Image 1 (cartoon, rainbow, N blue to C red):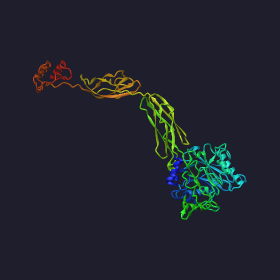
Image 2 (spheres, one colour):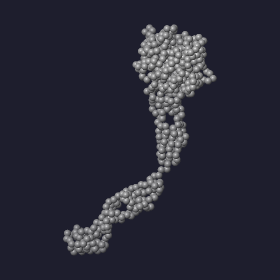
Image 3 (cartoon, rainbow, N blue to C red):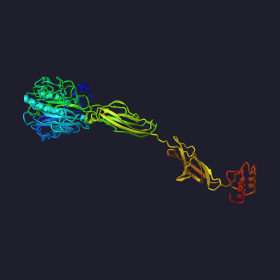
Image 4 (tube, rainbow, N blue to C red):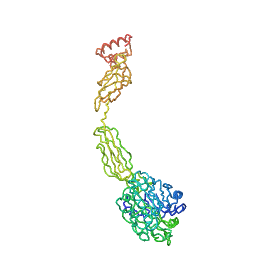
Length: 629
């Protein structure tokens, strides 16, 4: 939030334009003087005309002296069709009142109407209030609470200064204050809701702050719940007093003596001047300047009054110098729109509260492994106000995070802030995994968001002792030979390199495709008979937590190779006696007759891997005789 000092520096550095840019919700009151329609161009230029970067451009207007529903409808159409208008103006529900009517219009893109209530009815006699008093409860778009809302009383009190006139104003003031204190002043449900900010705006017809009606509104009483405050702290006798020429509102046309009365006023609740949430932009203690209309300490302005028109018509262009506040064109329209004595609009600016926005409403870590790296989930917090709607001067979100209610969770503890339209704050929430169990708790944020001063984020997670799977190792690939020629070979399968990192392996199973070769074995080795060919064998192991792992090994069974040819000594002559002689000589350990080249074959004639033995001699003799090996 900008402090009053900062606001003043802003205005002094850049003039009122800098302050205008800081406005978030502009609340105005305007007695348009017996309005029954028309005056379109005047109204449009008054509301959206620009002079030296300044505009009236309100967001909500409490209006007096409207003749009826048709006049209200036409006024809204005029606002929406004005050059530069956002086109989002709507009227609060109309209710006919004796004499003229108090109505309210507002911009629907910035404000939502919660309810419209007639809190006091006109008295047809001569002792009560002459017109109805209405209250319109509004809240900025995006908010839901009473603390973010404002009830705006729109009044048009009895005019003139006789004792009877003042007494009738006092009756209305008493009803307004009672209603603001939570009293049903006009039937059940008409009281101001508890905790809501409030204002009273309108044509008070009060010439001095000492009058009873004014003191009823602003004075300290036993019950100060419904007490109002003058946001510019400007008390005194306003009528025909040049000291208050910058806040005079009547009469710009100069038809009844000129600008010499502060009749049109906005008063605010204490909650709108406490530097928290929805709040008046300006000093809460300093009175309005008596030397300049462009008071840097206040957003409060009488639109068009540059202080040079005391007891004369509103200055338009004197000596070639235009009205310093609004220029000649807008000043002339302020005069032209008046019927009779007429009134100037009065406005003030309210700062919009911060809106806490969280990336999630709850945090769940699910299940995580015991002693694993602590998981982290980010909680993103930001000021959710949209600067495109409300401007850049929105209250900064301030919040603190308390330690989680359960020690297994950690969060950054401390105070934080985030301005609207800026970045976001990311807070890492983690779960300690050193202890097994199921944990649930809360993380509490305390904020200056009036809707959610306390935000509780549930957080949960389970730390479980997760089994680590076994590791299967089927051993290296193997190649074996069918030694007896029956088409099969016995193969030893060895999975002894398998292991379980956090338990034991309870069974070993060797499979070929869907065929179980061994069943479930308690030991890692098995001897199986495999046919000639290449096949993939799968080892499947199971640990004591019933978790399975597997690995493959490729086994190649070669066929029996058969006998060598009968030309044992490789002399190219066979079958002959020299082959038999050389075979017997080599079998006996002697030298081959054809050594060194080409030399004799191996003595393992039948290639069974066993030599020298009788099987080789018998095989040689069979082949020599023309028989199978």
